Amino acid sequence: MSLTTTTPPAPVTLPRDRSDLVVVGAGIVGLAHAVEAVRRGLRVTVIERDWRLVGASVRNFGHCCVTAQHGHLLDLATRSRAGWLDAAARAGLWAPEAGALVVARSATELAVLEELRAERGADAVRLRTRGEVGDALGRSGDDRADLAGGALLPADLRVDPREAAPRLAAWLADQPGASVVWGTNVTGVETGTVHTSRGPVRGDQILLCVGHDLDRLYPVEAAAHGIERCRLAMARIEAPAALRTDAAVLTATSMLRYDAFTATPSAPALRREVLGHSPELLDIVANVMFTRLPDGSVLVGDSHAYDVTEIPFQDEAVSALLLREAARVLGMSGVRVTERWQGVYASSPRGPLLVRDVAPGVRALSVTSGVGMTLSFGLAAATFEGTLDATA
Ligand SMILES: Cc1cc2nc3c(=O)[nH]c(=O)nc-3n(C[C@H](O)[C@H](O)[C@H](O)COP(=O)(O)OP(=O)(O)OC[C@H]3O[C@@H](n4cnc5c(N)ncnc54)[C@H](O)[C@@H]3O)c2cc1C
Image (cartoon, rainbow, N blue to C red; front, top):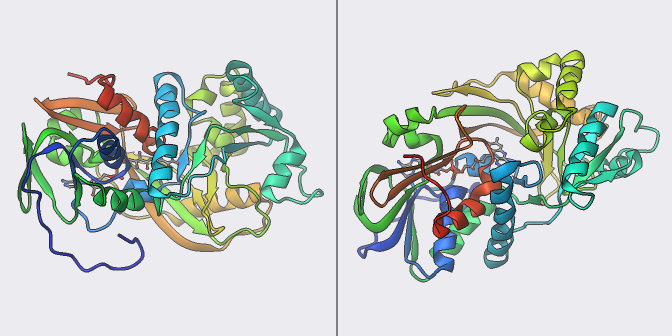
């Protein structure tokens, strides 16, 4: 299953036998559950409406953002890290333990990082000097004046979002007792049966991992959780020749976004500081960050806009702003864009996860906080252990 070549629709055969688990949706959340089912020797069928993956799981940064999570999500993210590494070894994924590099460009930004280090410990949050950050970014010695220092968060992982989920799906399809059914839309679900555009598929347990599209199958339950669509402006730029790191690179606006940073005492001062010098970034709810793909090109983002149905039009001013900020961090006068796209993920003001038992043996699970890559394998482990609480 490739993202770049067109595969003509292949003949589709639905499994005739009952599966232990039917997963609806072949994004990373559904696939992580299917991989966990295979690990446990279960028979699993994954049903995906499209012919290749085009959802949030291939449009993101490929950043398993562990350390920046807080509370319950930190536990899930930490478990997920182990699951990712295991799955990467099985399926042959690129998954360097490269961490995340948080670039600080002011004393306030450094204070947030120092406070996080005080809470988590010096191994989890490794402070970096201006020189070390400059070296990682490939910035020459006389072009580092705006850098104050930074921190490496070594627990964070990197994957290639173009490759990870498609390759996991291909790996799953080769496992005994597992199948992935492409090009098949799920139209309804009841206990023991998934109704599809090609006929029924039977399973003892059914898991709906359809992200924001849960509102199409279960509108009442989705509305009860306040599910909406978050739209993000993304771009891929040509390889910056000097960049030296596979770590995800985060900045001040990232520190305003992730709970581990926002819980620090200096976070309110940081928000005031960013509001003072870059209000336009807060207007677009920016998280200026980037990640490098194995070929050296770099994924740059992102902005956040929320609505029940997403607006299809991308505002060029938003993209230009994000690219300008990324170029500044890289110490470049400009960047060459090779691709642009809009990412869409499930979001909710009511909580980071939707876990709902919609019928006996039928569970809906959507990550509603934009960290599904990070949490996916931790959620899968918790689901099978029965430790993931469903809201009634
Ligand atoms: C731009 C962007 C950047 C992001 N960056 C990060 C990051 O760095 N780190 C991180 O942790 N998270 C990140 N995220 C969030 C993360 O990508 C998502 O939380 C995660 O991919 C959600 O996975 P999913 O499987 O629920 O959804 P999806 O990947 O959207 O998969 C859902 C699947 O369900 C299928 N489906 C829907 N309805 C049906 C139906 N009726 N029948 C059959 N199939 C159906 C869809 O076709 C789709 O393939 C980012 C998201 C975006 C958009």
